[in-house]
Length: 373
Image 1: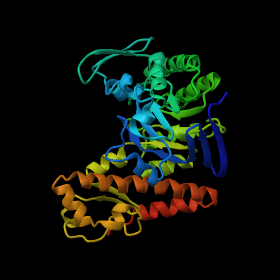
Image 2: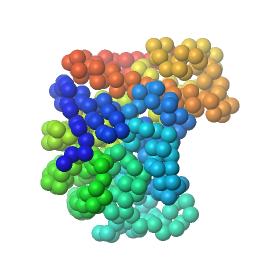
Image 3: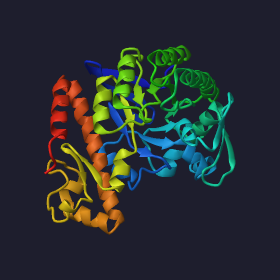
Image 4: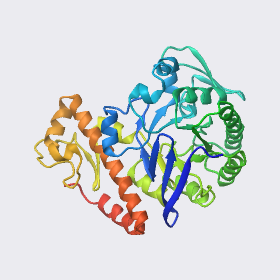
């Protein structure tokens, strides 16, 4: 039985405007989830995230397990109370972070033994442990434990990795049900750059039965043409009555291309990471504020943007704050970038609802290739 309600309200080609309902709130899709790795979206108050339009955020199981530890969070009740965010939270399984510790981990059928990158202590994580931690965090959407296949990998390596992820997905599903967990559980499609392996993975996950389906193992170094080839093949095979989530992909162009292929949920650290490096997203492209040309520029980042930053501060001021390494600059940059992403998602939803998504995409690309004044 599904632990969420998912209703498609409108379609424009494969693009979908839908509503995902969870006990802690409604999510209008397509939606972008700001990333709160350690239980905080960098430089942002929870109230600010809500005012920007965020309806769900992502927490990182692996990092929260290491710091501050599940016991600390549980003393507050759940991750929601710990970070003062009462809307839905999706937690990733920790699989990608374990994947990134290639020199500190050993993978077996049971799971992954790794050394903490913080203090070197030995930690074991398998499907049951991952689900247990996510359950203790109180997540509203939890992810099955998987192995993220490296790029490039040959077909034999990719098959072995995908089949291991499928076996772990079945154990994740069993562990989730044993907890009588009210959260929704998503399976993760793996299979690298091989269409037949992706299809095999998806079929196996559908036979197990999940509340939603994520596509993992993309944006790991492959060329965009390879990414879209894989999504093109999966687009009409993902269950139409379940939400589709593309993990870790998030530049604006990638979001547009994925929505065209039926993706509903996104997450990425780019809005906050780029803000810390003074790279600001606009409808006309990306402004790199460290460029000396902005030292005396009195214009806002984007004259048409309605965010607090653009309404009140000039490019010259933000350039100055970055130059002196003032933390206020990071906050104002982050507010702008997250506002841009949430505004982009609202515009996408409206375009699908009103059946002009094709025209919207054409105009999006026209503006993004226009020089930033």
